[in-house]
Length: 102
Image (cartoon, rainbow, N blue to C red; front, side, top):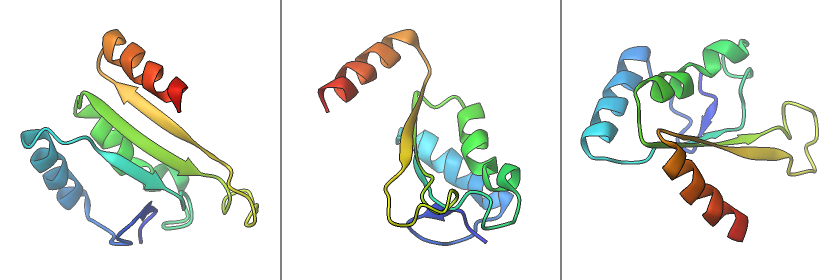
């Protein structure tokens, strides 16, 4: 079961933890594409676990693209949002400044 794109691979809790450690060591920015939250396991809370775990790992920035098209039955629409979690007010200001330009 997987609620995240692009791989469709359902990682175990241990595998998600390992991915987090590797990304942190390489100073990478996690970007989740959550299009099926609640559909993979039948429980939205369980499907959100990887995202919440990464947030708890104190990355400087985490991006989460969340689609609501399937969850709300809006299959012909592109309804969703981008969540940005940062570790400091300065990063928040800098990222918000760039997002406003978009």
